[in-house]
Amino acid sequence: VRRYTDTRERADYDQRNPRDQRQWLLGRIAAKDAVRRFVWDGASPGHRSAMWPIEASVDHLPSG
Image 1 (cartoon, rainbow, N blue to C red):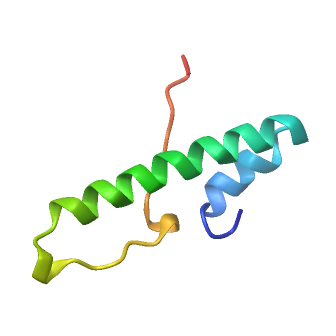
Image 2 (image 1 turned 135 degrees about the horizontal axis):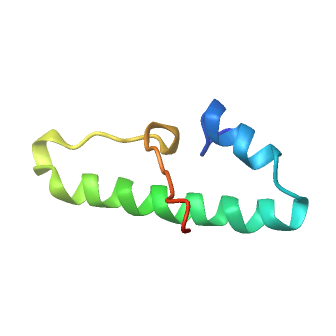
C-alpha cells in the first residue's frame, strides 16, 4: 500500500472495508502503472527516468 499510495489515498483506503480495499488498491496499481508506462514510452530514449508509483495521483469522479 505504501509504495503505491500517498497520505490522502491511504486515508481513502483505510475508510473502506477489507473486501473493497483489495479492489480499490488493484485499480490504483493498474492506473498508476499505466501512467508510468505512458510517461516512459513518451520520453526520448536519452531522457528517460523512472517514475515512482507514489508520484502519480489518481482521482475519481463522484459518479465512479
